Image (cartoon, rainbow, N blue to C red; front, side, top):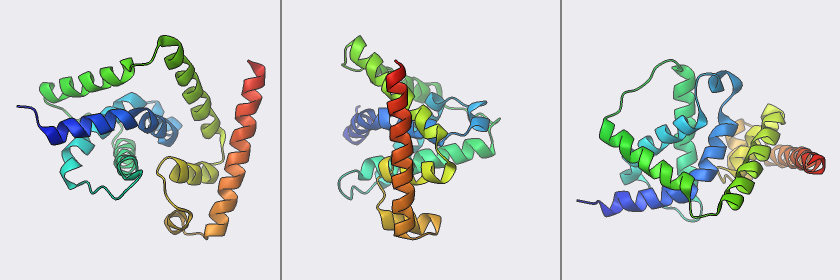
Length: 185
């Protein structure tokens, strides 16, 4: 029998999946990328979030994506700590994940729009990877996790003014990188 709560989770996850996949690509360092694919990490995040969905508290706009980003971050850390270990999943659960992710990948967009969005995601991920670590970290916390300046400052042990400066530099560098690539096309 279908579970309405889990169906609601699947719908919300599908809406956030592209953004979460990009978040995972940005948060996965080179060493981990040699062993793990960001799509596999997206599946791990889906499973962990689906299990924990009963405890999710909707605290307004963006709360679900922030919650997913925290779970994704934990998945990245766990995989980095145990990059060789593969957890076994029951085949039925793996099939459900694959079905959902296939629906997400297929989407309702035409091939040209999907290709254009994929190219934009690739350029953004590449640009973010080229930022200095500290700038990339605050940029991801602000624009992917949706954290406020004070929360970022608290997390990194800095002031809101320093975070604002880091975000400004990160945005400027990223803009320059993306503009430079756009002219070469």
